[in-house]
Length: 249
Ligand code: PGA
Image (cartoon, rainbow, N blue to C red; front, side, top):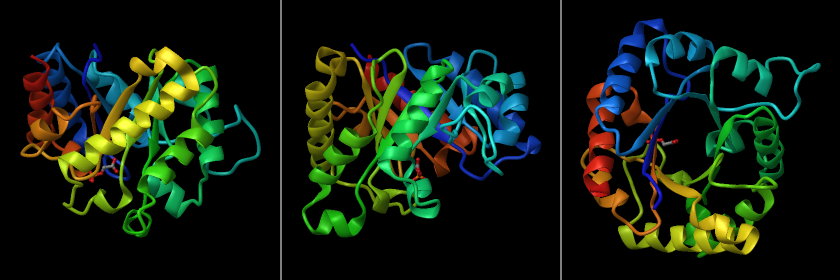
């Protein structure tokens, strides 16, 4: 049985003034012990967030593949660990688009995170043009094939399916479309890592909010949500954690 995971991605939002939100979200997570929750905050907020988050794991949104070196502006897994992060997102579509990251980059970043004991949320997802061309399934399969780190296992790896056109737009695929891609992702994982695939959580991400969360989280093979905009405040994020609890009963 895969426990639901509700992961917040604060993207480039969050100053110390927002630590009260972290605290309130952590309290709500503790009140919902049947599901897992986490917040991935900007690098500069990790240490302070850890200080107020109690048992709520705090993560990063990216990591460099090398442990150290001449890479201006980048951050390594040992640095994240020292700051108190226990996980990181890799391969987010905004990084693929803005920083031109490839699936191979995501693979190398996931491997670096793993080497240092960080959990990994590995993102995949098609663009709108790819979906319109009927290529969504093949794109997701190919991204998983190229980015799944060696030795992937449920203990440290979570996959997130995020159609790029659904991120921050208020548009979501139909529940059938979500079910179809998640089934394909599960089958691909199974081909690559065998029975371990049955334990690997696959999150859906893209315009998840309090009012659509329960329906999405009840879809077969949807083991949680990766949430951007609606994770920034406890008021918006806590209903999603509660929805995960309600569908887990
Ligand atoms: P959104 O972002 O919930 O604001 O659509 C999701 C994500 O990018 O992880």
